[in-house]
Length: 296
Image (cartoon, rainbow, N blue to C red; front, side, top):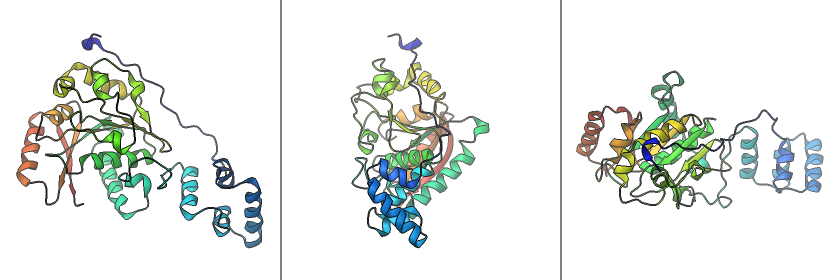
């Protein structure tokens, strides 16, 4: 395939519908959490004590509080995962524990990014998450930020652009036989993008097989063509990048109309390393959106 003129065929992105949300009882029955006979028992208790259906089902011991929260989240298009019922990594704290105080830090960062970078009036969609070295929480942050943006109702794509030490396929329990590397090499189409269910509006493009020439692949015109094509279907595109200390991949990615968010880790990242990364990014004309200190 001629990479210079490479085009990508975009698979259809699921669209939201205006169909009314089903009742809690209907969702519980349809999902197999309770039977129709048990639903009748719940309704009797509901009438007798003036309870809401979900609270009555919990009182009868038919569902747990966690299961009730998940059903409510579906009604309000705010799905999350229950431990033991999903194969996604528990590092996706925003997906498993959206009401945990820790997730409020991701929401606060999301708000800042919406104001400073993803403002619709600016028509900016790409954010590269970068860090000086490995082990600073870059992939963890990128994954959880993608989750909270999708929970906002934004069509969100997380791209694992770390073609040296990829992690997103492991976090989201995806096959990594094809992905960004095979796309840029002209050996795959955009159907390698994976929808993440039951999380609404979230898709992931894994890194794919580790290539011998990641820097050269990212410098090809095909990478810019790919981002332009993805812009048509996604409102937020977050790119996880390789550690900056071992390559120039992060700078290359960030220079492709991306803002850069630097991640540093307390008692791990040196000030000099952050300063050096800052200078390399700004030297390529990249907009530095901000920096995050990982205290974990």
